[in-house]
Amino acid sequence: MDATHRQDDEEAAARAAGSRVVRDFGLLIKSATRLEQRIDAALRRECGISHTMLEVLIRLCRQPGEEVSQRRLADDLTLTSGGTTRLIDRMEAAGLVRRASSPGDRRVALVEPTAEGRTAFLSGAAIHARVVEEFFVGPLTPDDYARFTDALSLIDKALREDAG
Image (cartoon, rainbow, N blue to C red; front, side, top):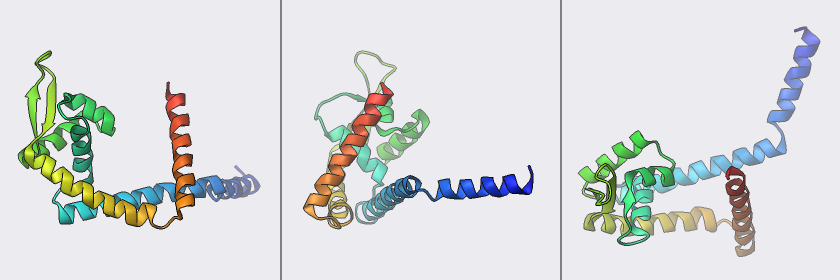
């Protein structure tokens, strides 16, 4: 490639990397990552659980008595099967969850919260809500927040429809 083509390619690449869409999407990802880090740090400091553990407990506490398989947790939380197994191992060792065999299929491991897990969930949910209120809701006016969450819903809907 000669010097002129190289310079043209570099300029085109710089324009693409600096485009508004790329910058805006990067801002969304950075903001979401920073918010997740704030939530995780507060949960670890104040409650002794990770944000991912709270997400498992949210899922398990959502429908009391619902049978939730370890496989379904992996799908719901977009974790690998191995990652979910290790996470549930840690949560079980901490007394937050217990595994049980499915009555319909002994090969399926069901996961349920323990009393300690429900207590940790309630503490963690309050911490989560406080951090989300401070850094996700608080910086926006009520109208801006409504527009933002409406826009996120539209994006989510488009992505779900496209995946089908």
